[in-house]
Image 1 (cartoon, helix red, strand yellow):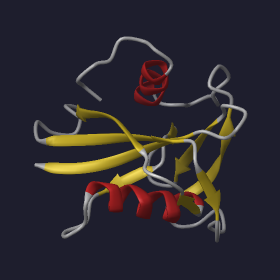
Image 2 (tube, rainbow, N blue to C red; image 1 turned 60 degrees about the vertical axis):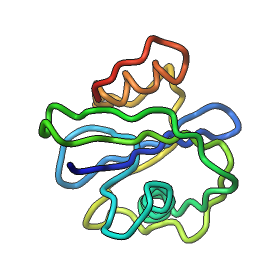
Image 3 (tube, one colour; image 1 turned 180 degrees about the vertical axis):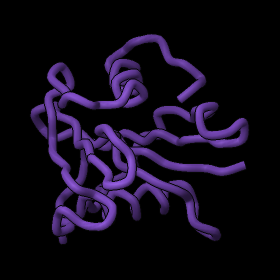
Length: 133
C-alpha cells in the first residue's frame, strides 16, 4: 500500500491554498508521499512546509481517507484540513516541483483545478463524501 497526504489550508477569508506542479497539469491541494518512518501527520506538516512554507499550528483535522483508484488499487490519500497556520520560509517559485501557488476563493477556483480538488472542496463544504479520491 502507498499512502499520500493532501492538505486543504484555508485563510481567514475562507480561501484555499492550491499549487500547480511542474510535472503534471492542473491545480492541486498541496501534498505528497509519506516517507519511511514518518507518521501521516508528520508527512502532512512536512509537505505543507515544503510546498508553501506553512507551519501548522494546532492539530490538523483528518477529514478523510480515500482510495486513489486512478493511480493504483493500493494507493490511499489522507486529506487534512487546517485553518491555523503561519507562513515561514516560503519557497521561491518557480522551482523544480512547484511553478505557481496561491489562495483562491472556493467558488472561483483557477481554470485547471483538478476534478479531485473540486470534489474534496465540495465535500469539505458539506457535499456527500466519496470513498474514492
